[in-house]
Image (cartoon, rainbow, N blue to C red):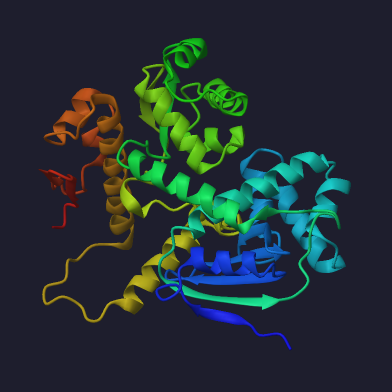
Length: 372
């Protein structure tokens, strides 16, 4: 008789769940539902982790999304493969290799990256529910053996400890950096253990920094993962070999404080290709549905104006992040952003010329839209 393991993370931490599965050498799937609605599947074989991914529209959605982000597959070809998977009931991995000509070792590398990213996020969850069920788990080959659960926990705790030290120093994902030094100079200044693997990862990141690619894009193309990529960007910036020059178009995906999550970057690319108009409409309808009641004196404005002001506010937030990287501190007033050249305040003015308001606090900047 097989007994399923289930419970709440508030009572039984994810580390304890991993330990139990590892010690019992179980084979099956651990399904974890987070407090925000995200769901993660972790596959175990004989107590070792062989796969982990955010649940998407199909079994390999996270793999497909990462293949696109890393430049190994186009969004159009991803969609074509997904359609064939559904129509022919074939495996995504086999089609990617045999139909698209991807090298098996490249697909393996991306699968490993998705697993590492997902586990790093999962180990930070403290609320939610879990359910482990014994079942056969799909692996690349019958000989595939994963990482022992105990080793996953040790590596994860080390990464979490290091991440806590980096909080507040890591750059925004939308920041664009330019090289101002050499890689050899960075290596000579580095006080960390210079293992060959870490040096090679740093070399890939440094080589992609060109004043055009955002932090997010460099990390994806370098295949180093969010944790290692942000750690390397922080080290390169603090060594003076790279400097922030601008913010890529759009809002900053701020990674400050304990709220940093890698899961938005692992979501299926299907949501990324939704028409912008439909997405904006969905957001506005959802906001109206959740609103308990209208204010006593509603602010009359058009939907276009609401979207415009929301976009401008996000651009200002991104500019504040960039100013902090350039100057080493938050701006005392918004006019400092213009003097530093990171944003044109006149271009962001509300239609009626109403000003934006800001206030500097010890923990950062409060930014209020014109309607406040």
